[in-house]
Image (cartoon, rainbow, N blue to C red; front, side, top):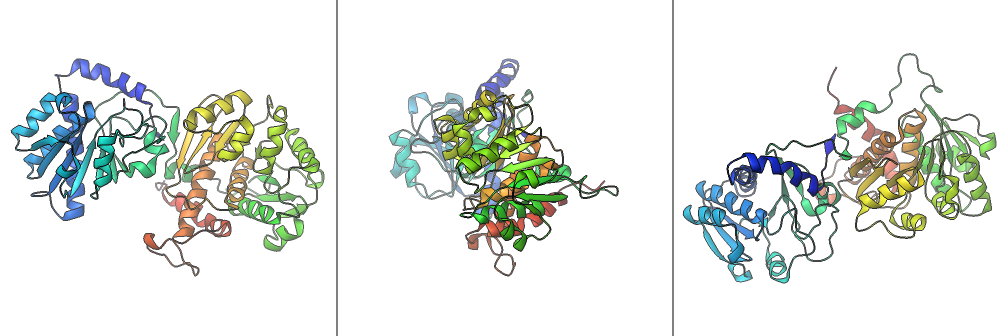
Length: 489
């Protein structure tokens, strides 16, 4: 698992090292790693390091010191380095002296001093900084056309929540020191590629983690020699309506594609489901659906009395239940249906549905918001977004960075629900099923965006708009690809 740590934990882990090491050692250790990453970027961008122009944006904190020391190391490698000091009187004295001694320049931070650099290092604020860039820094950042490498976190982006409420840096690369912070998962478009530099921190177990592709592939259900259609998991899907039959088709289709042993459909869109997926066993009601091991309820099912009664009946079972879409709207009016429910329950809202459930949107601190809902209602919650969050009632959170917004399309949530439902029916724990399903769903969306109508690969710049049907069509390939990350036994 990839772990993310809030800033207070990182600072606490730094304290014993700072106390035990000679003054400035930890900063120079971090800066050396930063300079190594920057040198690699320069070689990739321009073919070399010697003679390349690097500008440092230097604030008054330790990040400014990191930038100054990194600039010193780059100057010694032959770069032309200019430091733009946003607060000259409070610039890190040892770092500034080292840069000048190495032949670097230091000037007041003004747009006319920016020049035409090959690369810019953002050392404006660090993990203690909050809020948007101040006007002087914002003016300079706005004038930059070169790639930016951020020191630990992009300035102006909240390091713990990823929130942005004004001018902020958008980095091509962010170099994280000692630990990954929540911002690196929650605001990945602002961070760009994240490079990690180990500075020797000893950290506790994290309660905000991301599953690696190999870990998802390793837990995805695969039939063994003694399995049959029942032992592989039977998922019930209660979705769709006369108005939204497509929700049933997408949800049931995803459950099939996600390798459920059997999919039982219960609802009024049986004809449409069977026309697309003849392997589904269809009934008109949950009472007639037959035995299942998990339920998915809500997508396109409507919000009237019949939908409410269906939701009530499904939640009255002792089976794992995923509630999505219209089911969440019904649940917002009847929260006692899930509060205190003994069997596992997973709610999968987007931000608007989250607001209907709780009375407020999850921003700016999405992690805190999803934890609160999960704890107060005693359920698991999957909050959709570019960074999808899955919270357990005990506060543990999985995060899945989608790597793009290709799944932000009508019907994509129905595909996600069916995918997770299949995993729930296999007996997988709820949080793992949700995390694995979200990972496969995001990968399927990216695969769909990068293939043409005939399936040929397209350059990333040519990625095309994606439909939910295209995501569904790519789902099996996504699962297959995730399993290729597994090491051979």
